[in-house]
Each structure stands twice: as C-alpha cells, then as structure tokens.
Length: 384
Image 1 (cartoon, rainbow, N blue to C red):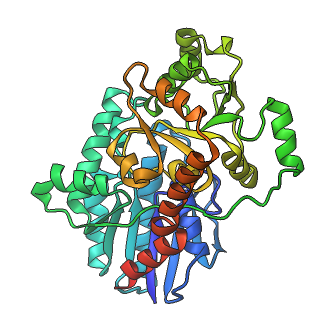
Image 2 (image 1 turned 60 degrees about the horizontal axis):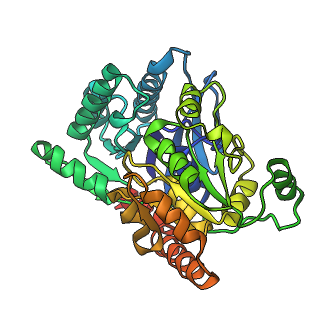
C-alpha cells in the first residue's frame, strides 16, 4: 500500500477553490486501490473521518490572520510525520500544495526523510505577484517559494510555463520537476432550460441565454477587472456583462466604481456568488462568451471550466492562457481599445464561427485536461 499525505488544501468535501476541487476529484475518481490517501482539512476541531475512501484529519487552526495558512500547513505536516512514525509506514509521500512554509520546510523534510518518506510540492502560481499582498508579505512569498523549490524532492507543476519558470529562476538548485495539468469537468449541467433554479436566476438578474458575456472569479486587481469593465463600457454590444463574484465590503469594488462609473452602464451586472455547482455550469453554458483576465501564473481552474462549457472565450494574452487554450479562444492585450475591438467583432459572429471556436475549446479539454487523464497520471506518479 502506497500512503500519500496531501496538505495545503482547505480539505474535503470541497467547498472552496482549485486545490480543494483537485483533492476531491483525485479521491473521488481513484482507480488504483493500492494507494491510501490521507487529507488534511482546516477546521475548528481535531476529528478524523473517511471521505471518498480517504483518511481525512482535521487540523484545529486558530484565527491568527494572514499567518493562519502557514500555521495550518506546519501543523498538518507535523501530524503527517507523527502518523507515519506511529504506524511504521514505509516510503510515504507528503504532497504539499503551494509554497507557504518555505522557511520551515527543512525541519519537516528532515524528519520525513528519517522515516523513509519523500517530499513532493506543487508550486502553484506566482503568489508573490498578487496585488492584494503588501511588500513584506510578497517578500515572504518569494522567499518561501525559493526554499520550497530548494528542498522539494519533486515539484509537480500544473502549468508548463510554471515548470519553465521554476527550472530557469532556480536552476542553481537543479530542481526535479514534472508536469501534470489541472483537470476540468466535461459533464454538462443537469439543469434544463426549464429548470426552476435557472429560470429564477435569469428572471432575478434580467438576463437571457446567449445574451451575456460572463466572468467568474475572485474580485481582485490582478485579474484585470478594470480593463474588462472599461473596454466593455466602450463597446457597442447590446449584450450584458455578468460578473459572478463576491464584492461585499470590497474596497476594490468601490474604487473601481468611482474610477469607471460602471454603475451608470445598465449592461454591467454584478450578481454575487453562485454556490450551486449545477446552476453555475448552466450559467457558463448559456453565456455568449467568457472573459478571462487572470495573468498571475498557473493553469487556472475557472479557465478550464469556461473552455469546457462556454462557446466563445476571450483571454488576456499571456503564456499561461495560450498554453491551455491554444487556438480554441480569442486573445486580447491590455492596450487601450484592444479588448473593445474583440468584443465588437465577436458579437457579430454567426453560428458557424461560434461553433468552430466551441468545438476547438471543448476538444482541448477532452484531450488534455479531463479528470480521468489527470487522475491516471497522478496515480502513476505516486506508485512508480
């Protein structure tokens, strides 16, 4: 039996973002029964339970602000080492998602290696570039990334561009890397055109199928919301711009409203968050087009979901996005007028043009990013 300990996600059942969904899918779709997964879960207790056949252990994390995630990963790693020792487990793998505990990783790795285990790390994206962090926190993230790369026995990158960056920027450590993509759900929504959840959502926000551009994601500056909103406001399209995001008590929202005056454009509709996953799928499927403004590294889960669901996808032109979508999307730069031009152009697409783009984007997901393919690659990695 191969024991794999996964720390760094908030845990399963998945309620949050990309890493949580990854762990959910990895355990849910497990094929090789010779692997035993152990999953850390952030909680307010120390309970243990089984879920998707995985042994899940809660880590009671005090509410200490930005340091909460660092504390969580350290406490989870400490638990893993103790569990491996107490149960005499040979050749265990501890797989750490993201680079939060670099300054402390040497200590935990030393203990793990003394027990015959191996340290795998997923470096995620460029966390140190995120605008939400102040200078001191960005500096910590960059140092932490460096030390995680230095001490990892294997770095599993979900983006070829991130793998290239790791190899180039940290070549002095001669990092051992491999590429396994993030996955996407290629199943269509269970909701029909007449489903109550869908029709009520449309009525509530005054939108209609194929009558809106869409964006889903965190409302933060580095996702280029300002560019998307400004350019949309300049466009001639009669379609709406629907933003599925949480803007409650968000300073960025207030700043952007003041700078752009988007509240005066009745096409722009902030509709809040959508936690009903079948409804969210339906919203993606019925959008005319999807905006993707993420440019801070890695393969973004929301991009994969959009390519699998939405006919036309408009992506900010960075290597991470081109790597994923190739010719299955349209691209825009942040230059003044560039996105507006793409919006005006694609709004006039006939059914044939839309269908060609839709087929190409779906084919990219089916061939390269299906969860079945990703799970098989991880199982091979863990057992080889």
